[in-house]
Image 1 (spheres, rainbow, N blue to C red):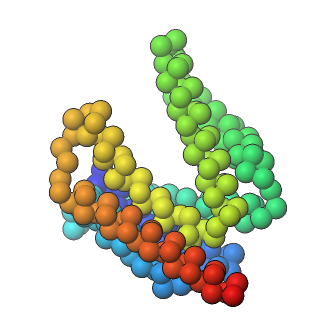
Image 2 (image 1 turned 120 degrees about the vertical axis):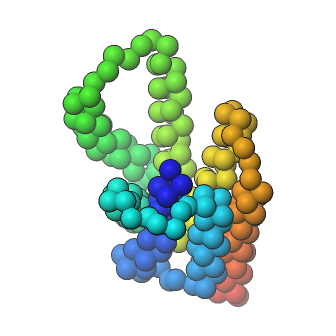
Length: 197
């Protein structure tokens, strides 16, 4: 699992390259520092082994690249479409894809599961809506590195709800992730203010 998380969190790095190529966003040094500190923070939290050679790692890497492309295209769509429109068409596309794959391994859904399914659905749609709104007001290379914060938040939830142990590296990694993101945002604001004046 550590290797999977480490590879998955390369999505912001791929997003920076795709956003520069597709959206013509500038790759600035504060954004680079944000991504670098984010990757270091993820490494400290996850602490993957040195040998990531399993063929499944390539599938995870492809998934991270696909997420990066989805982020980039969401930013592109946010220039012309509302967040609700993007969310509607995303759900419309995912519905048949999910239905086809679920049909091959269908299980009975018990009534006790429906409230949890509803909560997961609402939370998932809310997250995608917030992402689309964020893409409307900021460049993808500013928004996506915030995704690094998901890892320390997951670790905190694991500690509170599942009694998982917390290592000191969690706090160091989380501080690096948060610090890199805040640095990037502050420098971006200064650049915008300088451009306005």
